[in-house]
Image 1: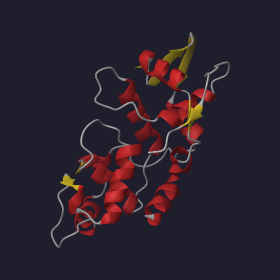
Image 2 (image 1 turned 90 degrees about the horizontal axis):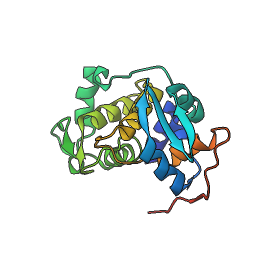
Image 3 (image 1 turned 135 degrees about the vertical axis):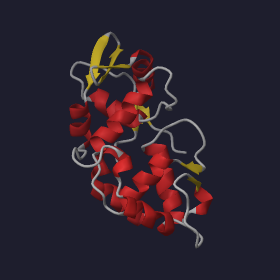
Image 4 (image 1 turned 120 degrees about the vertical axis):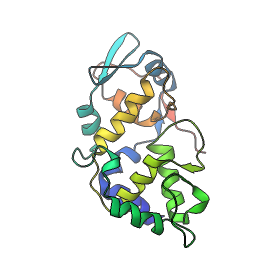
Length: 194
């Protein structure tokens, strides 16, 4: 498990995953109620103040890498083939879309980390989606990923009406909002532990 976190940190996710766990529920609720995507930016209003979050601001705030793969289907096929055996709990190769129980424990944990912090689609966390599998492969084999684009695209999906994305990234959004000049977030509190 430590190796998985070290890999994520080495890939440039330390600031994104390690934010202070403090948030302002009222501001966050208002952010999502008023947010949309315009001209490639996430825009919203909070207490009548316009908020614009660009990919550049997002990347700078969390010190995210801006170079590397932006399309996970470009993960080299030979690495995907190797991962199908490496991740497997049995002698059989796992399919790209499999159940977590088919994978070794450390890859189940990596899948959980990605499911709960990176890919925030509503639905079952027992199944490993194709994108999550490819991202796990990229992380395991140190493939360079443009985390800025990947994570910002998830944020854009979250604020798109009708999206099946859960309203996640609460802490990260509050970190972004805290840096908006002249915006008062109101009462903040520690994020509840599970």
